[in-house]
Length: 151
Image (cartoon, rainbow, N blue to C red; front, side, top):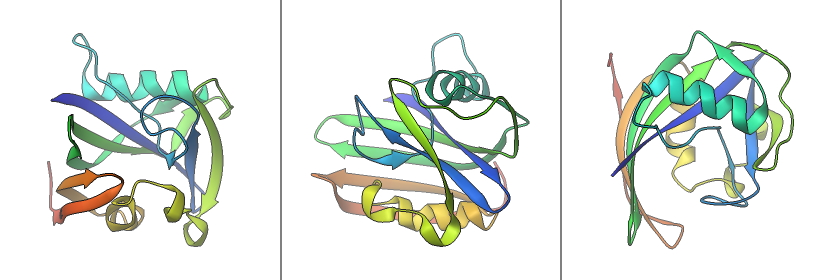
């Protein structure tokens, strides 16, 4: 199992998503993030990945979720989900991601991971959540997302 992070920048009621251009999740809109290195905290990994993928340095991360993902047959990720309302720099396209701002009503769930529609609305409503998600062939086999009071 890999520990990974997801980070979503939020500004003026909009959410920054990025189109994955290569690797795992290619062709999908998502937050920025990735694998936690052995010498990093989850927050450090989220900041580093944001710098690498969209060229900004987030400030004051807010942990909003934990998701245990199984992408059958052989991927298992424990994901720590964060948001940030402040950052240094302007989001820019890199070799890995193409960022774009979306209003809440325009989030492209049809071009995202199939479980996102169950927990991103909680995140946008400033609710904390935990869950287990199993996906096979881009189809949800299990999705149990629960609101929590704290981490």
